Image (cartoon, rainbow, N blue to C red; front, top):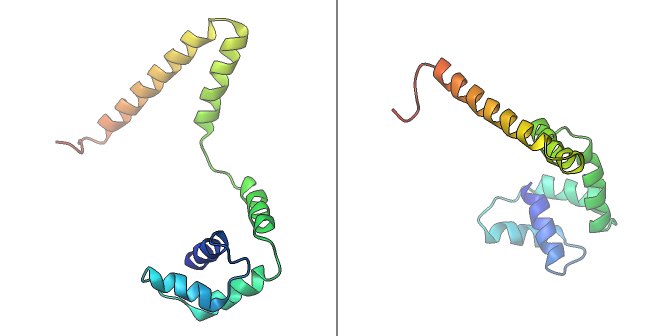
Length: 117
């Protein structure tokens, strides 16, 4: 990750084709160790490629990675449906939130101790 960050910093600084020495200088400026093998491997993988293409390819790969957060998507869908279907969905969303809070409190009691006691 350090090498990738140094590469991105060099590109953002205007160096469209950073060398291994450029990356070592950037890493050295913050006191990070520069591993020559990793730098050379990374540069061989990105050689001749545009940074915007690399970022776009990375985003496509990350799009298929599950990131959790299913509860957020459900909560976001409820207000959208409530706005289109009338006011009856909003109280249902509030009661669901209250139920979730109560469940969380119960699970804390099951542990038998509190972090703040």
